[in-house]
Length: 192
Image 1: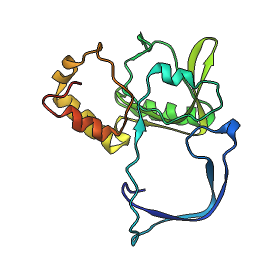
Image 2: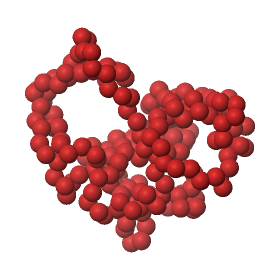
Image 3: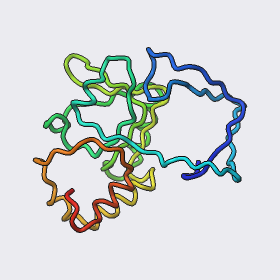
Image 4: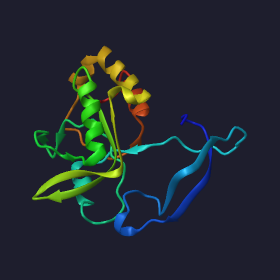
């Protein structure tokens, strides 16, 4: 799919989302089949806003665990979770998702700096937060997403920006893209 494009979808099935399985904002689920067709709509005057991700703190994420309510895509540059370093395995992958991750990880020349996992189900398991994959979960590494490539390239050239990080400053959760974040960080007076 091309960013900024509008698509027409033919031969699909739509139904109301079952609350017990709901893992995203929408109240409906669209299912694809072998004969579903997705084609670019070239003459559309309808403009949709860019996809955006929400940045959540650990407490917000933990609060929705096990509630069978709406969960959100989660993206972040995680260094600490609840002021603890990431020494425990937090993401649980199963079946094909686990195999795909393993193959992809082994093919990298170095450990990834950015890992984006979509559609995960947060649960508290024996007192620890765990992120479990679903059949729709996808894992992306550093160079899989254009905005991430630009972010990492800029960060590599401007490593002094890491020295400006002030962990004491509390910020509110905002809806931003990686591109928005990179644009903000490029400003001279930005507080990273």
